[in-house]
Image (cartoon, rainbow, N blue to C red):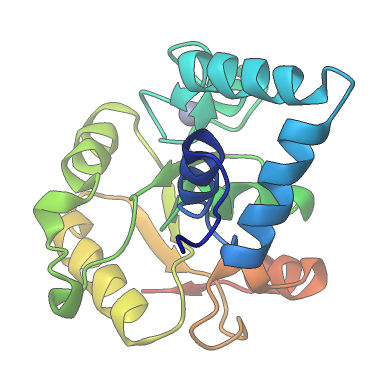
Amino acid sequence: MRRTEYPEALRNLIAQLRQMPGVGPRSAERIALWIVQNKADAPEQIANALRSTRESVRPCALCGFFATQELCDICADESRVVDLLCVVEQPTDILPLEKTSAFRGRYHSLGGRISPLDHVGPEDLRIQQLLDRAAKEKFSEIIFALAADVEGEATTNYLVDLLKGKGISLTRIAHGLPAGGGLENADELTLYQALSGRTRL
Ligand SMILES: [Zn+2]
């Protein structure tokens, strides 16, 4: 006798949900069942939010943070200090730094770090855009806020080599970020101290 299964549409929904980060088979099944059994319009609202977010949110043309216009809110904010730049690995590193209020300049997200083992080279990152900005925006200081692990360090050193001798002060945030954790896992005070106590490169 054939084993009874959920209808194909439901099985497909479970398979699609499983693609999401942090969603295992059990969670995917629970979410899918919630969607098909929900009597209110919550699933439709989620579908709408999904579509409109996909259509409206894109990377900022300048820094790579999330934006709904060409420039994100930070780059479009004229009250920000214009000659200070903070370089981070991921756009998600920017909000934790913003929360500390220790930095009023602008950001540049690389979209990752150089990692030969993962086949990520300089050309895969937003490094040319960084050099273009350094040539155009007249920064007095560029602060590197990459992870304090081997690949973060190597990426920082690579960028420092490209940017030195241009009359820009190159600094890095003080160490003390959780090893291998990146900025996302650092608490506010640690980040504040790391930003305040930066060292020259
Ligand atoms: Zn931006």
